[in-house]
Length: 88
Image (tube, rainbow, N blue to C red; front, side, top):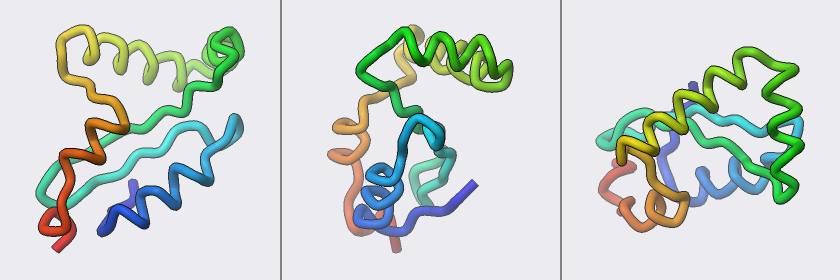
């Protein structure tokens, strides 16, 4: 799990995500731990990947459960919630 110290660093990781590198776990000091999952536009492909990868399937199931409980947020919401003081 990587530690993120700036918005620029977070955006660098996000921009490098792709179908082969689609899950990123990280922590932000002062905020907590996060799991970021890239969802491709072709949604069926992630279903196929999840069926082939039990760990990904468990992670997605847990993510959906957390979202249904109101514990999730979009990337936009995450970025808006961060300020420079969170990285100090």
